[in-house]
Length: 170
Image (cartoon, rainbow, N blue to C red; front, top):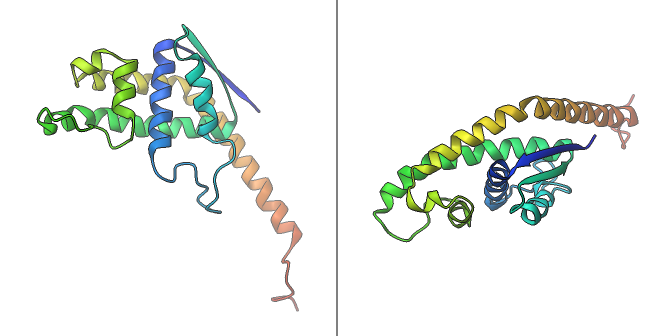
């Protein structure tokens, strides 16, 4: 079932940061079981965000899997935002990035200009993202239930097929 989210501009920008953080992590779009590139992951959500990011509100169409991954991406980005002021203090005024995710610093400063003036603004962004995550919680829970059902059905279908080889049969 497709999920539709309508986010005001501030929240859409937070979602953009979360997806950017997710995609900057090596292997984030690799399936853990098959080690192949995930079809229909968050890489497909990024263009939707990019083309609407300046609008007053953004409408995102996502699958259950994408919504679940967005939730995970938001939790990772929250951790990054909470550590940002500490990383800024440790930088000693050097121009090096404060984030471990490529492009995260530049995007945060571009989307949220107060962050360019005060690194502690990242803490406020983390709070805002956590509030957004909490508002999305019921939809994410429903999406994860749907994904669990799909996984169980796939496992049952595999079990019903039986073994493709004759070993173990008597």
